[in-house]
Image (cartoon, rainbow, N blue to C red):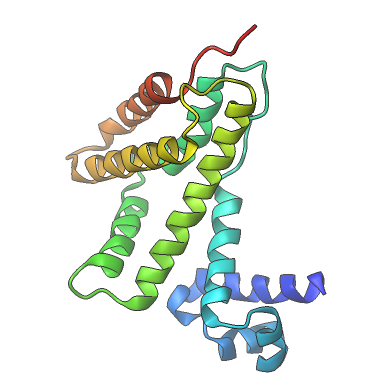
Length: 197
């Protein structure tokens, strides 16, 4: 059963990579996977469920746990390392940032679409879940300042969104290193404490 689901997800991910999420129709994915539409519907009852599975798989592949569980590394450094995956790593990431902004515009702007809104909502929920997982690891170690992980995750993701906007508005890519530095500073101040001995 898991093999068929993976086959469908692989086909859907290929289509999304080639033509975008809008091209993920039941018919197109079923044809690419070499199965019937009714078989696909057995694993993904709605197109929304299929889209969410592709988004989840894509984000999970990009947002790794890295060293979050490695207690030999300071908690703040581990969390910053994980959160930095949301930020560009080089000044050459303008297209990546523009695609990120385009998603927000298509979901919330004047020509917004319901599909884009659902996509953004699903991505936001998955990102919040990933950050919460990392924070839960630190909480178990006693390295969080306050127990409200959802609040921490929300603040950190809002900061990351703001940093991405600032990088897009900058005339040059010189701000990438500074964005990473600001993120590290925020983690130090907002989230982590030295764990108890």
